[in-house]
Length: 117
Length: 114
Image (cartoon, rainbow over all chains, first blue to last red; front, side, top):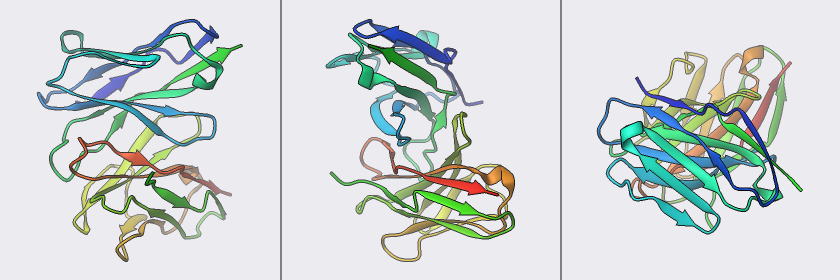
């Protein structure tokens, strides 16, 4: 079964703190993609990053970094020096069929991040 | 930057009425999706569409739902007889097929069924 679990429902931090959002996934496939999307208060879903199951190299992009570990089926997301504009709901998602005409995304429940000034 | 466009942003309808939600995917994209998000909950897959036919649908996507790509640009979701529980944000998404399976989402249509 395909499943994405984001155990943290809400996180509240003070500006400039680092914060890590956890994501654990379940899949039977050996080929899959993992994603993080951001949903700001305005409601749209904004793509942040994609990782495929063959690429465990972790990535840093500005204040964002991602830690993908197949051994623990985790794909965590860290914001360094958080800012008020980072306040949003963050969704982790899994796609098991990237190469055919399907490719549906399975989303976690989301983590609501609140960054206070 | 190309984007997915959804109209209207908010649709209010009476229970039992038909609604059509409209989406204009990114122009060179080949795969199209509808998702919904009930207030405060996670985003749920409804249907995927490729080569002018449904490629996959979820249990939510019953006979009351249909999708269509009537021309080269629009992608629509129709709900024939709306129920109160259809109230949700509906997102359209598209992907190119070459861009590493990245789905780009529209801003959503909030459907309120009264």
